[in-house]
Image (cartoon, rainbow over all chains, first blue to last red; front, side, top):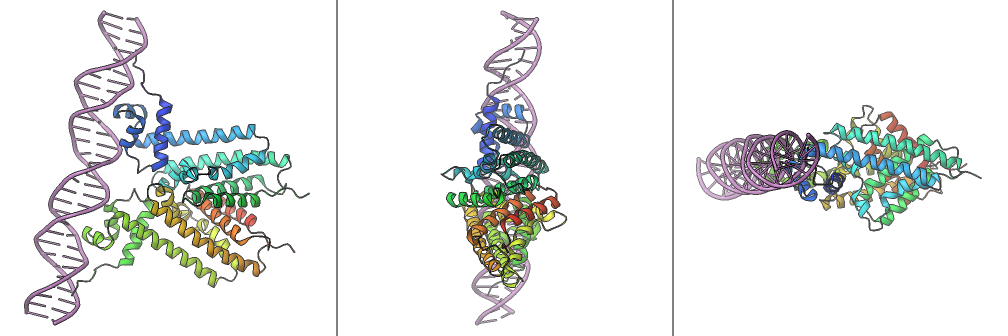
Length: 198
Length: 198
DNA sequence: CAAGTTATGAACCGATAGGTCCATAACCAT
DNA sequence: ATGGTTATGGACCTATCGGTTCATAACTTG
């Protein structure tokens, strides 16, 4: 009884996400979104609402995917400490520096929109709280596996590691030399994750 | 032979800066800037050029002022370590959290505009490099004053502290509870600035 | 095959964006 | 006092913004 969509919703959402990610919210026009999605106005508005709603949808999907990825890594990683290190080193991982310059959609969006769009700030708080919880689990595992000094408080360290990642993201977005960025990330990690005294 | 300006240039620049700071670049309209500055279009364009040029001017002034302030603190502080701690704790200092939510004009702008406006990213790199240099000096002083473990490499630690500050700024902009923010900053600092073994 | 429903995208809309222009006012130097 | 020069701010301009409307096409179901 209905006419089905001609487009793949998730493909469109990814294309839209990339556009917002590359240009930022305000600098992305609806015309841009129509171009990268290949849709007409009726379809895009009909399926996702206006620009703001579409953006918030994309942002939430992005966060959920990030969280799921991290949780999956905690489950599959050989050692808890590996997940934590990867969490901080990840943004500097691409040797071309392109990933570092792109940064994180959530961090970029929060910096751009936190004041005027409280939903974005709230989403960031939600996401960071969830990330912290996962990091705590990874740190406790690391401690049990003998990779972390037992004196380190997992909750405190998790927040510190989140701050470290956000700092690396922020610095990486300036386009700083990627080797320096990586070295800095490693230096911070070494301080934040002391090995057990033996 | 000339007609003098009727407005105070630095007052206008501060008003414009605050507007960009509060709303971000794209979300600030020329109408906003005319309103907060109290100028007419002819005056604003005549004195500072277009929106982009005005913004870059304001951003550079902001950076220069920040740098000067930090340098002055290094000169006037009782101990080098105090400057470094203040550098990281500063963004979380306002007990109402308003300063933390506002963040840093440079960090916010870099997150919003780094991709599309290379001048902003370049300005951020320049500013962060200069800040790092000042931090190195403060750390060397701290070491000489017996407040810092001599094993700590000042250059490496300076970059780590910059990352820490940027992370605090980023997290603070989400509107997270200011006590948690401060506690996190302290925890990071304690790890990054170990006291000398005795 | 027909009826009913929804997706589609081009046409269209008012509002606002940033930016230019210009008549006038204000001022300094002679 | 007057001529030369610049600051001023409102009028004006075009492009583009996000968003709505609607005739049509496409499809499912009975």
